[in-house]
Length: 636
Image (cartoon, rainbow, N blue to C red; front, side, top):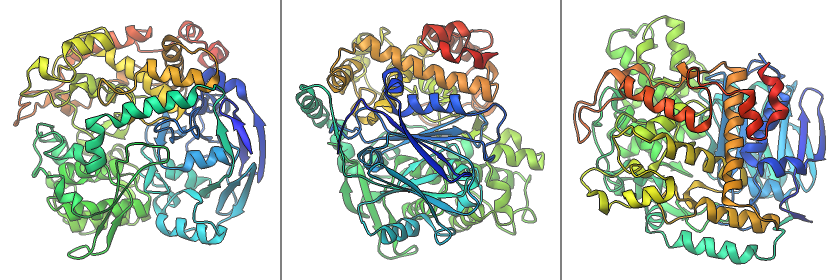
């Protein structure tokens, strides 16, 4: 079974009716390429206003990208979208591995899932066939057991699986969806949305081939792969994994979200070798020339037989910096527990950090916490609390919906809930002004995977001309000289918009950001990606056309938040603590996000997009300009 990569097949699944229909929608690929763009468009087209995230009428979309399965470097990403369980706005996430490629090979590019099953079910997708199957026997299983049992049932070790754990089954908003290989559709509470629909898992297996339309694609793909393999930075990630970013070797100057953002310096910084000593395997996502993934196993000691399929730098920040774990093995144990339970690392740890601060300030006592001494660094108690959150037991029930909702329920401690649009903030952002802007305006509520410029990092103590993001490089790529200057506010909206558009394209063609010049200037640029897209489609797609498509996709996210959550300018500000309390130690001592400067930066951000500066809203005129006039009625 062979298909051209510009084909786009959509499976509509109604779990209430138990029905599946498949149709071809190539016109959506022409407008958005696939992936995030098509998912967000389908969500806007199918989701009624005012539908709660747990309601059967809520919609989930899952999609692959234009280049997925073609062999293009890093083209392996799968995207998911729905209502955000924590913010009420847009939920959007992307994950690597091999799930997306397997889905395309099975003859399906996108899923639209509605309804609610009467009993637990899973989807089985294989070679143009999509079935809804009973899954009572899987309900209650952790993610690792679910994957093992499904592969045994289906008789194929190569089946790729996306599933929820107990946290999703119990409708915890701080849950996620785990994919084979330890990847995750993180943030946004996707586990609870699947749990409400009683959809335990999606299993896929395909034998088809995805072919580019142009005869020059293979040559251009090989050239792009050589560029990626020539990066010293990516070679470092191949050697050490992405944990490198949270260690002394990765960035000794990086500020930390220590003790729920009370401090900029963590209780302890880590060396990458403290994690890598437990590495048992290095491996790559499908079609990736880098291989930044590691399997880790702790054979003995306090937490013997701890096993992790994939670890990221977030893990060390979440539990090491934010919750003050000083033992790397305890950090690995926390990661494993979250994986098995289907808990989102960032949202679960952020909520616990809020609870720890409330406990230490006397807002919460042992009578509230089931007798737990909930202090920063108390690893055994925090590990126990993860179980309670996933199962909604006792005090864990309060924390299962995130810190903002928890604070409202007890009517105390709201000022210590460090959230963006209602979702936990994961990373320290006070010194990094452009990075901070990208995090705060992200339509999914925090996180750096939209418009955040990595150019601001590791510039302390370096001469401006020695940085890889020098003034010359910055001006060549962005048209402004200061993208590499960490603490300045001026012109930072420009690189933020650049990466919002570029990342929207990458999410829609299914390519990992690590392949791109987000990581360093010499990696793949929009012009390079436009060449690959042109060859894939066998028609000319210019760099400008590519980035215009990115702007169209960004507008979809903005529109969703405006229509379904009513988000405006007031929702694009950092938490008060980060504006009122400066960093007290370290190389960025004294840095905070100043309100007046933030306002100027936010004005500039809205202007570069063409949105209303006073209220931050997108208009019908804006939609028409980016080719979304068919969605004008949503603004009525």
